[in-house]
Length: 442
Image (cartoon, rainbow, N blue to C red):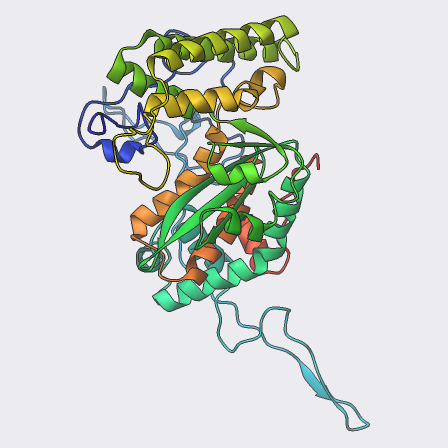
């Protein structure tokens, strides 16, 4: 059974599937055609109304049919035109700052001030700093390759130490903005939570995330459980609905909870494939049916399913759970065996059925409150890019490095969700005027 697990029937990542067959998607087929969907805005390359340069290509002086000279008064510009969109040659530029000075008749010497931020005899400007941070923290380039890219693209030769110093500076300047994100999450009605392992040097740390459709917050901690969650100060004060994958430590917090049904579907697929028990396939169909019905209900502007439909799903779920428990009863300790410490190991089917029964309110909360989604995919997406960063670089070298990444990535991912420009925001942050990460409606 363990050998048969991959990303389609367990929580194993797709990267662990290797070169075997592509796992079957959990999405139902036939609901949407391949390609762009109705209402989707295309991204075709379009002409610009005011080009920066216009080149008129002249005719040859002679007619290629008779060889006579073509009179210039007969020449006109064709109505057909073609545009080429390209980048100009890019090279860094140096601005030298000078200040005036003068001595008053009374003897006092006066001297003008240098602009704010210009404090060194030679230093890098905000655009270069923003570029290095954008490439390393958002586009996931390693520090050394970022230094190479800056030299190849712009002629700016940076040491890896300089790049790292610019990353640390950005993290320091963006801390107040990330604190704003954390505070805003405390007041949201529904927040997604997740955690995943990350290597810091030789040690295993844990990356924790809290997110919504417009906000992303990331932080790291040596621990995965309650000690880490308490230290961040979000879940202990949160009063909304926490969407997560059912990790036991979340149960310590008094907020409302909702479980990720994508995890349940994968576990049910595994049980259906390994045991061939009909209740598992029927539970899969029931969850998918409820998900589709909720989608239609949301399109109509409803906030929940009717009480009758809620009772139907809960009752049908209870019937399938009872059927499953009849086929997968709880294992009891063999009285003939010597006593051992701890609980008796249960089957995967029994554990899943017990969870579906014990936390039925959390499993079916999406039918009661349409603000709660069917899955925890929001958190999965937000934590995927930090995992990619680790795969590219191997690990984070220090705790300070992973903390800086979490701070900068929280800010940039939040702006990206809101459709706001990242590069300009970084440049403004280095100038001391970081744009607020709060959505316009906040």
